[in-house]
Length: 171
Image (cartoon, rainbow, N blue to C red; front, side, top):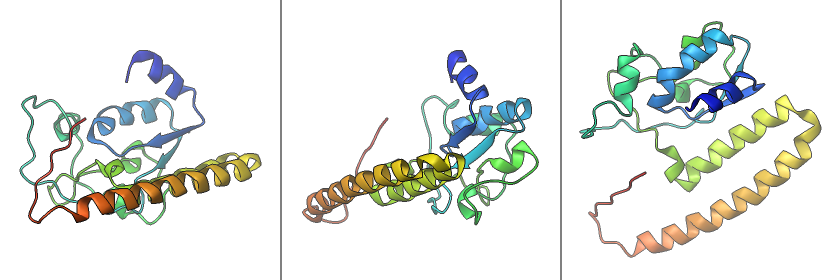
């Protein structure tokens, strides 16, 4: 993150974690400086797929940053039952590779997984700001309706694709 983003995060009441390897590279330092910062893992409850044959031309990206930051293999936050961490140390609040395999963090590409992320975020916001519960739930319902429409559109589009088919996505 940019320095101004780090300042904003440092002063936040709640950090909503994406669960990406890049985040794993810097989040431990932030949590060491702000041990009271609540972290909400929006990927909680989502089973990520193991990445195979993953590589980049720039080997300093994705999981490679996390490896250099000294993040070892440990259970993913997706395998934890609770979406919020009550762990005492910053290292317990971060997702990791499992069995030496890196997990695909690109869960926002699936409307069904985004639905789970949105539910987790809404629940966390309702807990943090009970007065805003009605607002958060209404926005969640509206967003889920949009996701359902998108999922139907994508289903119709992909139903015309003959298997096996390869897709390329980028960001």
